[in-house]
Image (cartoon, rainbow, N blue to C red; front, top):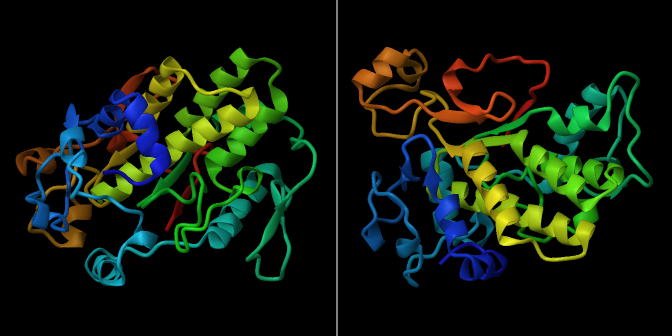
Length: 315
């Protein structure tokens, strides 16, 4: 059915969580397959993915590392799909944090010259003058063409599928939730700031299977950290709140057109030059994301690039 036993267990307990994670917030429907990989199951490019489809035992969505080598090679050739190992994600995320904090190795330290292994820094994270832990949690982070979202959260290595221990994880959300853990004084405060961490963690992806896995990874990470911090299981209300934020913040989009993926007989250069009016004429749907500070959706195309609070990375 889905991508992990852990996710399936939660979906069995609360079926509406899967419904939320399959939502396409821009269209009001579900995310679409946006590929021909599932034609053998009768699912075409434009078809929506629904819980009933995923509940068909023969339709299985797997992380890339668990797919057969032929499917991996086909995705690389056709879609330029190449996943990044956790150690590379860590180095790049460290560079972003070094710029934000003004010092190196804030969250972890290299254990070898290349940085293929690391150790979480001991003690509480210290913040530079003029900046607070709340500023860090609220600072927006975006992973473009996010795949399974290894830069956002690192439950496992996206290349090897090896799990990563909770306190050694290196994603943007992992770092934000570590900061929350170290600074709040009550369960209520933890929940408020954990949701703020999700609200400031963004990613977009074209492929349906990658997108669903990315969303699941964020939800499962929220659960992992909640269990560790609060010593209990999340409630239905808490899971729903987290899933809603994830469904808005990790969305399906063609990065060239900033619209919901559709079959356009155009070159990449032509796609980049499309205006909003052009997209509407071509019946392409411009993507919405949620501005949590303003409290309403906005067109992604209208968001100004280069904001001081934004940092981009790619697989």
